[in-house]
Length: 197
Image (cartoon, rainbow, N blue to C red):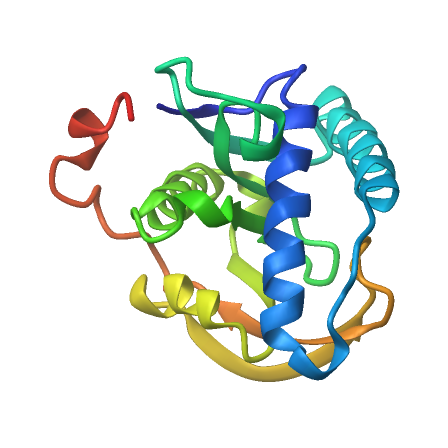
């Protein structure tokens, strides 16, 4: 089920974030494999859970999550949450909305959850006064997952910068995508067909 994020989702969101980051970091930088001990992973989960709960509490970021409502959940699998998107007012562009994060757990990728999350957030942010000039995102350069934006019609602006993600031991190069003027209407009937996983 796709739904807005709520208080209490922090641990599930963090589990998806940490699991996805570990897989993606290794595939994007094979010469710099990230070895994560169980202790490091537990610490990362605690820290990220608190961070995401704070965002949910303050409303600094808005969230949508894809949740498995069949009851098949465990801590390694995202505690029922299979993917999430966070978004809000842009930190870098006035009167723009910004997608901050879009992650789908590695075991649940290639099921169009990322596309659904992006579409739902994009529809929401497009109606917000603080995003009257548009919507953008900074994506890790070279990440194959960036195609979710390209398939939705978002275009590279040619701008790049370096950021230091919370789970990265070193800065990463990111590139900016900008959304078209308005999101497409809902894709087919997925909204109704995927009310539950």
